[in-house]
Image (cartoon, rainbow, N blue to C red; front, side, top):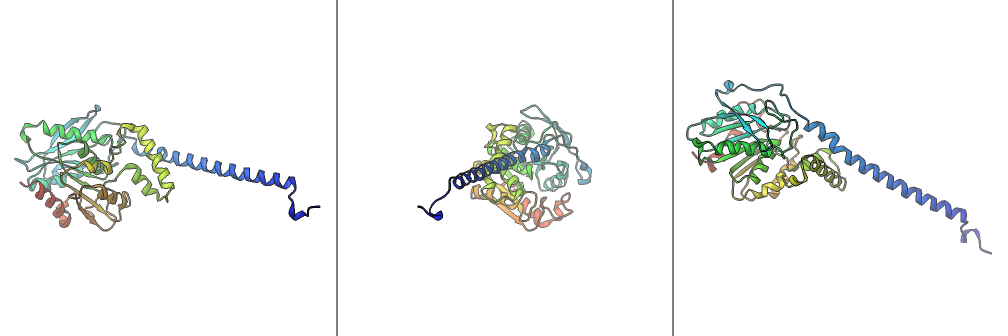
Length: 321
């Protein structure tokens, strides 16, 4: 007759089987809930962020920088009218197109840069990107739609007979920097890029700011890419700076970032540098300065001598007067 230790009662076996099924079902349920949460985060966070139009609390007067720009209206490929401001210079060495970030500042904050560049022999076109300020649009494009904005600026400059043959450089901050890289990748007429605090891709900076460990970061990145694909079109999913920077060819570019940036973490800069052609120049500052320029000097960038030397030195080397 078998002992109790040598046999298991049928009821005990059934309980163990039920327990295993319950645990398995609970694991599956938790996994499904987790995936649903990860899928819900991108539209919950990004949806309100891209909703426009953005009304700036403050814009800047060109007179404060000693400028009298020509107001320009740019028409984009997808039918939006954009406000822009042309700072003319006789026989310029290059035409610099400025673009700002996601929610600001207004591109008019670059009047100080335009004044500094004008003195050095460079003309400027300051473009208020879609869904911001006086430009049309009801949705920020996360550097997908803004490519059309910068291409509209390029087309305007190329069509101006007074500037025939003058090289065009795109100069962007944050999302504007990402759009500048994207635009250069698909626009051969762009001769160079200056990018401040650009993200490598929207999914990349989204996950960086969440601080998720792998493999959760991989899952979240996939959901972010699916969301932006649904919003902006899956046909534009290759239009990310970390992909488009590889298409620069021999054209010069300057990537600038601060190591402690809490808006676009330094990891974006590292990914861009990793995929950039070897000739692309970089400059890194310590601290958390998303605007890069020394505090209080963005409107007067010449007061930040180190920054001014880096920017003007890059332009002078590649686009000498």
